[in-house]
Image 1 (cartoon, rainbow, N blue to C red):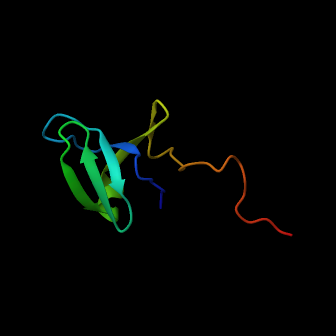
Image 2: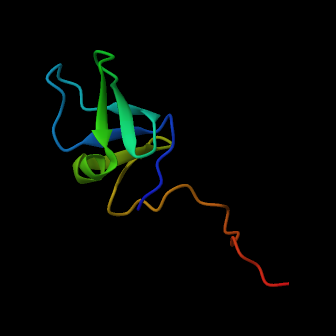
Length: 83
């Protein structure tokens, strides 16, 4: 499961009827709340439906395909360290 954060900008498989295909994530969890950046319409998708539809995510100023997206990096630090 990929990690998305509130504020991430994504594109979906199909564009919105207003003509825009950029969406901002407003809420994450079991359901995902998205806002169209063209007309400000808000929609809810289940996480399963969202992960089927999402295609690209904006990282910095580049659009990265979901196939290559690993989530936000922790600067090379590992979570578990043996003492």
